[in-house]
Image (cartoon, rainbow, N blue to C red):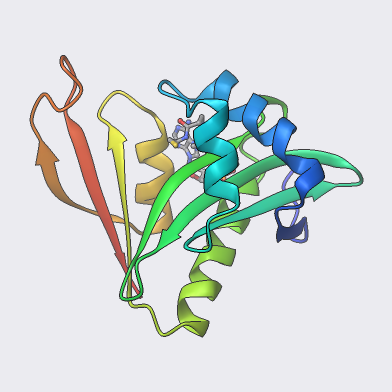
Length: 146
Ligand SMILES: CC(C)(COP(=O)(O)OP(=O)(O)OC[C@H]1O[C@@H](n2cnc3c(N)ncnc32)[C@H](O)[C@@H]1OP(=O)(O)O)[C@@H](O)C(=O)NCCC(=O)NCCS
């Protein structure tokens, strides 16, 4: 069921192992534990976590490059998909950008990943294709201008 008001907050230390498990389960090339934990503690990296009661439904991670933001990962537990969780996570990234006067969000996704439909629905525009970037698959580069 679609909800308008999931609880979205900055990552807490207690969330780390669930986020790590989620990206391991649903991302084709997940970060290893050391990279993941290091990211969480780096000031340029940000994580927003979506929760309902004490359950983690999904998260988004991004890097603040001062003049733009790069989305690193956006993952929603399959039990909670198509219920606007990713949309609300992305809304929070957008609000972050607006409050930091950042005008562009960029991301890269494998051509065969259906996440591209989410990005397109959200308003991202395809700006570049890196041919065979992933061996057999192209990388699609998307931009959202704010
Ligand atoms: C991509 C992903 C984050 C979307 O999360 P979500 O919470 O289900 O997305 P939303 O409910 O906010 O979707 C909003 C709209 O985007 C579009 N959309 C989302 N997922 C879609 C899919 N798999 N296929 C087609 N359209 C899709 C739909 O238009 C949807 O609206 P609708 O449900 O009313 O039709 C989720 O499928 C996921 O975690 N995928 C695996 C991880 C991954 O590959 N992440 C990207 C690379 S890091």
